[in-house]
Image (cartoon, rainbow, N blue to C red):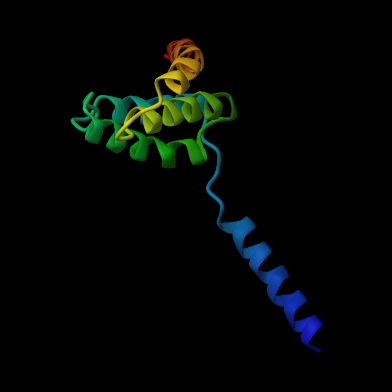
Length: 114
């Protein structure tokens, strides 16, 4: 009886989670949200601003279009490392090409959607 009940609870939880997941946005919707976040007053270059920007990008990444999810993760990773009390210069240098490529991808995709 315990196994059956456990199985039913697990199945209900999976069904509930599947039904509550946010839909994936289109490229245009993702670009619009990124632009809103990037142009806000919290996107300053100091450490606190980088933390706020990364935290504002995280929910966008969760529902971003498939094409823009990886570039957003590159931005978040770079901002997280940059905002550390003692960022690892070598790690930042290794992340720089991905960060630059992410910016180019966003520019290309978002410009195409306008």
